[in-house]
Image 1 (cartoon, rainbow, N blue to C red):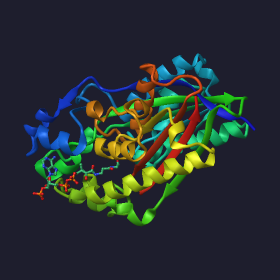
Image 2 (image 1 turned 120 degrees about the horizontal axis):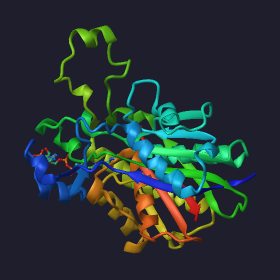
Image 3 (image 1 turned 180 degrees about the vertical axis):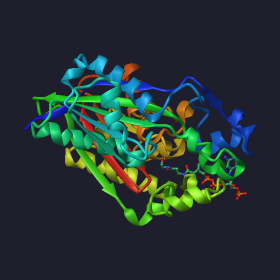
Length: 337
Ligand code: UT7
């Protein structure tokens, strides 16, 4: 058995910055409300015509991650792509990345549909493949294009002000020393709350496609993401804490052993709740939701890349990744850097 380590990281966000004041020009909202409730100051939105999609952003993040890993792109054995906003209904973006990045022509590509926890689920799957010796180097991507699918009117303000676009990527590589790299991952879901944070259409369960074509109603709210915000918030703080503790316990670690916690960037208030509960200093937790909003499957790899590039993660550090979101799904990863 082997371990897997993160051998390269990269991220990409569109250049276009959308501030809270920008949003207040198109819907009834304001900077004070958004900052107070979420901590978000600005987010990135793609610009129509610039050509950025979930796949192209994922490709740009992946190019950086592969470059940082020092590997040749032909050494990538497998691709895992996590997103809730794929370019196409099918096929998923994994194969598009394989083609657009010019990776080996017939390597496998897997798409993960676990929303905010997507990146944690994806590295967990990659880790299992590497542990068993099946693959040596796996490209894992989390990428989201939210802005083109949000209700940018006052009706959608509780959701639309939160989400941003962007992508993060990691290369996971074989590590012979089993005391290093990813020590464990823990994954959970609770499907009974599936609709509490969801986008119902254009799923095939909503209606017959012929009906959609016949009476496509732009005011049909099921075409926009729905979130029962307070219910999601209450569950998030509980599940984040549980799954971090579960990971630590499995490795005989204490909260005080955490050198860096990278929580999914859902709401700064959630991160602060966890920080306070675990009594972590500002150096032991990384947040960038202020600048990017919630980028769902991309949030953990973007934050991880930034924290690493800012020198906040060093060799030998215990790094904890944790996420909670739609499904509900949640998970954690404990990494010895
Ligand atoms: O990434 C997946 C996981 N996601 C999460 O964990 C998110 C969890 N939930 C949250 O972060 C928060 O629930 C939100 C930030 C989404 C909402 O904050 P809240 O404190 O729960 O606000 P609320 O939905 O209860 O709304 C409070 C008030 C309402 O007005 P009334 O009914 O009290 O008059 C809303 O209509 O705030 C109003 N409101 C807004 N006002 C200005 C909702 N959205 C906005 C807005 N601007 N954008």
